[in-house]
Length: 236
Image 1: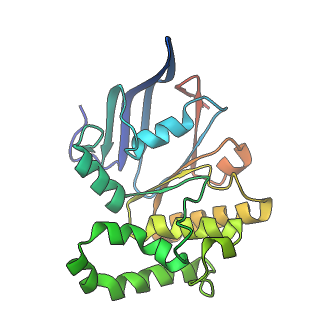
Image 2: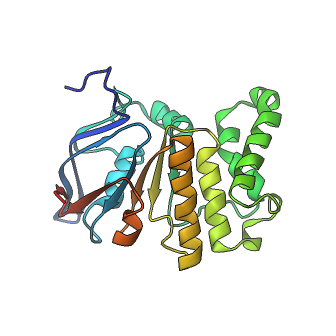
């Protein structure tokens, strides 16, 4: 049993996850335990198919475990009603993927603001819009995109689009950032820039980060490395 007063930000306990394809069952996670302290930067590594992305998706409430529990700040979250899980993803958990998932018809500033437009009613949005726009602009400025606020995705490089995606994940001021291969589509220079930005967010802002990667060199930028093998945590 996990105590409600636990100082840990994230606790994963005994998590199992399987998928079926026809008559075949694929056991992806086979009893995972993982703890994350507030302000920690953890890298999850392992070969393709080891369960890295599946674990991240369970932590981000994009999927539910077949067995086991996921807790955030002492509260069990994997079994919450759908609306409550959606709310947590909009307020407490930011996510960045290998694909940028930017809306092509919106400019950089509008893409960053998208999560807040979902959160607020029309009346509430008009009350907070000035502060929200300033926060989004400040994030883009911090990531070196102050001169690109009104550029649409097709006018941005891959590294710039990923920075917009990170700003979008942070605009709601989440407690936890989950990053799934965020440099996978980028060249080495752009990828290094993204990692530098994540490390700065962790060090200066105290943002808790879980980063999935297959690259051991990238993982070394984190405070702690967790290796998955065949759906289990492998002791390093």
